[in-house]
Structures are given as C-alpha cells and as structure tokens.
Picture 1 (tube, rainbow, N blue to C red):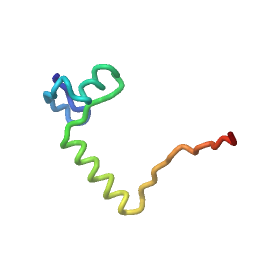
Picture 2: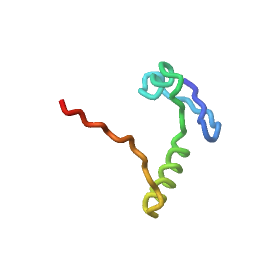
Picture 3: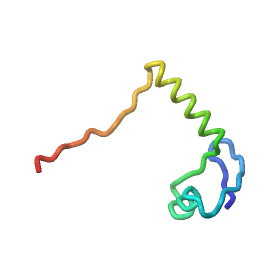
Length: 66
C-alpha cells in the first residue's frame, strides 16, 4: 500500500497486512505520518513537557453514584 505523509508529503510503501494499513483503509479519518516526522514531533513535545510550559487538557470524568 502506498501512503503519503500528512506533514512532509513523502510517499512511502507499507505492508498491506499491517495494523496501520488496515486503519487507513477502514477509517478515512486516520492519517499517515512518516517515522521521521513522528520522531521530530515526539522530540519537540518532550522538550516542551520538560520546560514546564506544556499543559495537557483532559476531559473531566463525571463519576456516577451507581
């Protein structure tokens, strides 16, 4: 399966039987990101987390009494 990275527009080939390929086929909202872009984003995110200026907003969980 040929896929295109969302960020850098690099075209790569991935195996049709992988989980990523199945997600891309069955759910069009899923997008592909190459390993280089994913690594760069992960590195930058970890740097922001370490600086203390990174806030992760999570949904508040409503607890039921039952």
